[in-house]
Image 1: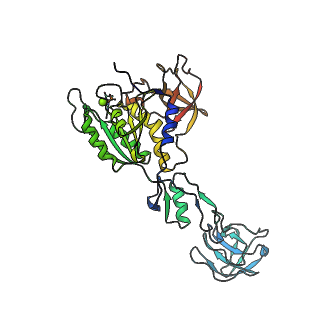
Image 2: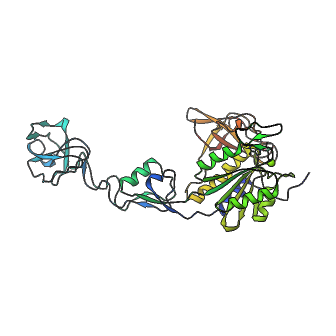
Length: 404
Ligand code: AMP
Ligand code: MG
């Protein structure tokens, strides 16, 4: 048996090292319509107040609160987009509709339901307070107020807010360009029937989905055979237009494992093995020109778990996300969990609610080839190495992939 030259690195140390080695990409200006999922590279402040003017929150009459209890002369109407030009003087009122600008002189709005409408006149109730039923300028956002901090993900509400403030484009972190390659002589394209000893290249599709979810722009290179020269030619070509190389397979200790030696010739391999199950052969290298390479293990669950632990946070850092990790929540274990051997195990679990608690159940066999252990899993639970493991009933922290 060949022995790996690479030391077994603690998974947390390896994750910290990876984050340390990747740099935030230079930001770019993007039209608001294409900003969904992107990350502002700088704080966004309100260029003007929202609303810009005092506007009515209801349909009714604008008047002076001091005129409470009186019958007032109706001067005109202020509708949304069609403000009333005149002043509301003592003894007068203006009809007003939701979103209509509060006329000068008025200091409150009374709802239609609360008045006696006489057409040219209106009788309003007693006991009115100034400042009722309208939004003051800047009530939603004051001019200069920080509205979207750098590092937040832009969703529908943030994009709506930017549009309301008249901001047509934003400076956002660039999406990393990722070249994705599967390695292995046993692999055939999806849609082909695998012959004896062959399997469908499923990692490409899984990693493509994971990369896109993490915000990457992916260039799929397809399948590389286990031949050093062909692999090298493909990788060198792919790296021309990429920030990141992600490969799967070809990193464990075996005669056909060619990725580590190749990365050694193209840059520096910082991590060649990690104390993580699944995912021990995970490989990370920095390459010339500030590029990085992730050599993920071939087994489907190993490649996706190492993607979660190492690649996703790195891609998020490159885009300028403030939050790099998945959320962590306490969960109660519904089963005894044991890590086999000397590596931290990321046990895949489903969650269900019992009262206010989240209870975790195993997804069954945790074999690194068994994608069924990850499909439908809500969370990953870290099981420490050693005999003790974690017992049913104990509360532990889980890395949340989705909530039930
Ligand atoms: P390797 O690290 O290249 O020795 O790969 C380990 C195992 O992972 C292989 O024996 C395959 O069963 C599996 N494997 C490797 N690459 C892929 C892939 N692209 N899609 C699905 N399974 C793969
Ligand atoms: Mg292989």
